[in-house]
Image (cartoon, rainbow, N blue to C red; front, side, top):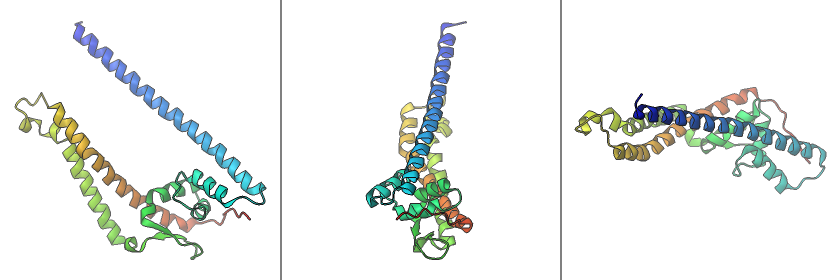
Amino acid sequence: MGIDIIIKIFTLLAGAIGIAKIFYEIVIGRRTRMREEYKFAKEFFSELETTKRIHPFTKEKGYQAIAGDNEISSCEIEYLLSLQQPDLALRDYVLGRQYLQHLPQVGNREITFKKKFQNVWFRRILKTIYCVLYAILVFLTFAPLLFSKYLFKDSTKISATAIIMCFFVFAPYAWFALKAVTRIVRAEKLVKRQEKHTPTILQVT
């Protein structure tokens, strides 16, 4: 067995171990974060129930900590927590908030689309545009690999500079386009999910 093969094997093993370690740390970190979120939520709601008077600032910050977004008001969060699958409702609202508005005490559905996004066909056009942009940008990201035989004299020697340049130029925009589609889809799901609304909002005086 040649020294080159041995080096390649060790390189692959090191890479595999590194990836496994990163994945393990992500999983463990997520579990730890979920435990911390549970502990905080339990303590916060316990305080809401037992404390007769809680400062509005404390209440606002507590709800925002649960939502993970300081741009959302406690009124919005209280309503979202009253829905079925409140954790999913919160995440959907945080993602799709730029398309949504909260109209308290307006029927049984307080979360609606902003006026310019209420037309379903307009939203479909937006999603189509973002999907097309995503496909084009992904294509451009991997263009050096796809067209190496046309771009380089020796197709086996693809320019690392070209690959890195295309990745850093087009990949972020591809991600933004995909995220934009996701935001609209999640907003639509949240608005629709309000059909299963259950009035379990915590009332604190």
